Image (cartoon, rainbow, N blue to C red; front, side, top):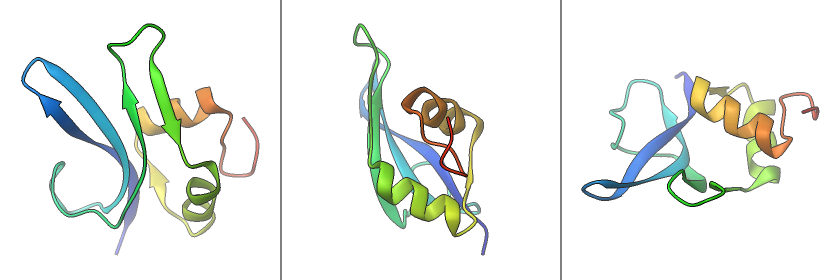
Amino acid sequence: MSVRLRLTRVGGRKDPKWRVVVADQRSPRDGRVIETLGHYDAQTSPSTIVIDEERARTWLARGAQPSEAVAKLLRIQGIGPAGRA
């Protein structure tokens, strides 16, 4: 099973908010998740990014691969696979 850190959309129509989740790569975008790590709201100024750093590092250490969008959010938060930004 290939596990990924990725975004799932929540919020209303024309009001997107995103959750940072751990999910099986084969499940649909808004489908079953293993764990929710945080959330992201791009419509606030500045953007709101809240990620549980400890849990994210745990999943990265276990081999979970972040999507491109989540990798960018992790870099902004200073969370990297080896503990670096």
